[in-house]
Length: 119
Image (spheres, rainbow, N blue to C red):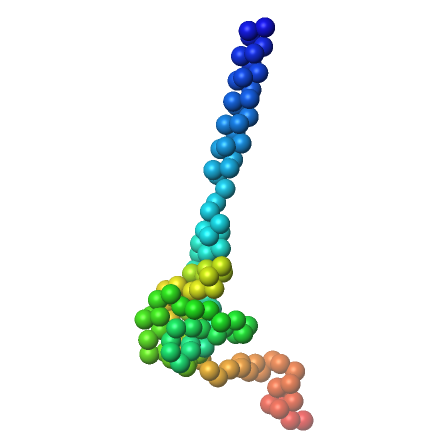
């Protein structure tokens, strides 16, 4: 009888210890929302330099707005960390994006064969 009570007590302690360990292993709610790897975002910097309007029409506030100084009102490519819960970007690097689209012309394309070889 004494051995069965000890075995039952040991089983209860093992199960509760395992469930407690699983509970502690889950991540914090805020940590899952921020990106662990930097991403590249294309967008237009606001006139005050504190927000970026991305190419998919979502507005993000910038935590380190001094990184965008001098880029106000311009189209930029930003490498940054994203926090989706707070809707914020932490800027790592900034590059001015080309506002013009450029197209490559290949002579082998069927459209260009007629233009280049008039028969």
